Image 1 (cartoon, each protein chain N blue to C red):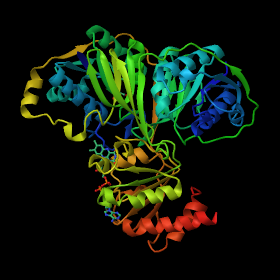
Image 2: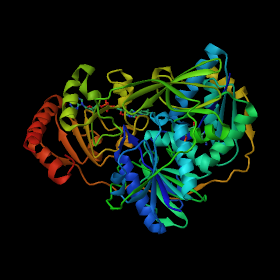
Image 3: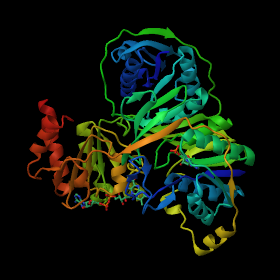
Image 4: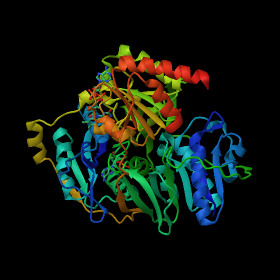
Length: 319
Length: 248
Ligand SMILES: Cc1cc2nc3c(=O)[nH]c(=O)nc-3n(C[C@H](O)[C@H](O)[C@H](O)COP(=O)(O)OP(=O)(O)OC[C@H]3O[C@@H](n4cnc5c(N)ncnc54)[C@H](O)[C@@H]3O)c2cc1C
Ligand SMILES: Nc1ncnc2c1ncn2[C@@H]1O[C@H](COP(=O)(O)O)[C@@H](O)[C@H]1O
């Protein structure tokens, strides 16, 4: 009857989202008077999960699951839920978990709610709060099925330390990796991705042309940030599609979002509103983005961005 | 090849979001509804399969009569026929079950849905549909080619892309990249006239219980005013980000 949490990992290390979902699972388990069991696929050191309240880890170690495979992973998590008799399963709202969890929901005949931002406000009926209308509103939703799956938004619930000593149990479920096979992966491994980044530096059409992105990349590098862009910038081919953020692009839920030469159209804001702190750099004091920002600099990006980078380098050197 | 494109009927991206009836219902007053952008990319890719590979293309929506103009727009873009499952779309699981019945009855080989709808952003209908109908599933699909029963797809992953091979029957969760913005078609007069004569079949729903239910909506708390920092005083910005916002 424990709460089951699927803790994502990469190259044998847990992702930050793993600790977030574990923290969330612990909050649910406390309300239910039960414990948290994690299922981990080729994951790392279980004690790291213990710090966030996990008491038992079902550890799957199998080279066939080295690369993420949504269907096979759904098979694994389903069997873990059945083995534990879990009535509540917690997953992340990361791209991978969003790929997997609808299949898991069918497998467990469970109701699924994604993009959940708070612990359940009621256990009976089981009620959670999720974002809706691309961050323009919240929706309180009940899950009425016997088994319930909650997909937690990134950076919404936060990390809650809750020391427990996690016992590890080897787990060897059945799964099939057939159906969809990966032929090749094309990915810059040396760059922080928008999904994982704590800080995102994003620029828009105000930068005039692709040749001017050097200063954006330098600012991002100084901050250890990912780079992003507005939609017209990727439509014009100035930047790769994968950097397009907003309502019709990638969602951003970072701690800090720096928007340079972006006007702040409603479709752009919708996708980045989940970011905690927003800084806007724009020549136009009337740009709508200032209304959505926490901090703003009215000024020319070509002067402000290099100057800010210098200041930040000096700040980092002092730290 | 028989293609089914799932069309969700959503508020235009510029819509003001408001609620009525004690914040329990979305206020549709003055809201313009459109084809979900991710579905529009999918539909346009489906038209390519129709024109280049002789595929047939049907579109489906699960919803009330108010979604018919959106389905007519899909017909005007070029779909052969439309199906509306006559029930309110309340929960992703229930919608997926309804579409699964349409897929089985119609014997579709390829279902193109969107990565997510921009209203509830559930991102669950395509994956559930694939699981229910035992089809292969590729999400975040940004390129799709089909040769006989084999398919090659590219999907967006964090920080890059991944090329996969798979086979029909297949469900994809599509997005921009399936086609480009410039490939999208605005229905012309002829398309609109022809769409009036194309079949829009209303089918009754199967019994499918919703697993979730919406209780109420909330708007985010209004934010405080922006703090402006002078362009000549960026030390202050660094200071604020470090000491006040605590993000660096
Ligand atoms: C269906 C639909 C979906 C959409 N989805 C998205 C989406 O997901 N994401 C998205 O981003 N957009 C989206 N858009 C587009 C959106 O409406 C805006 O057109 C877009 O966000 C504007 O991009 P921008 O701010 O880079 O460019 P602009 O609106 O052209 O703004 C450029 C800004 O740069 C400023 N500027 C100019 N020179 C400088 C300088 N030297 N220094 C500093 N600032 C300067 C200007 O004052 C201006 O505010 C969508 C639109 C539609 C219709
Ligand atoms: N009511 C519906 N009718 C038809 N297709 C739908 C419906 N709801 C969702 N879909 C499809 O499923 C995709 C993902 O939607 P969602 O799971 O709601 O985010 C959409 O882009 C559509 O292709």
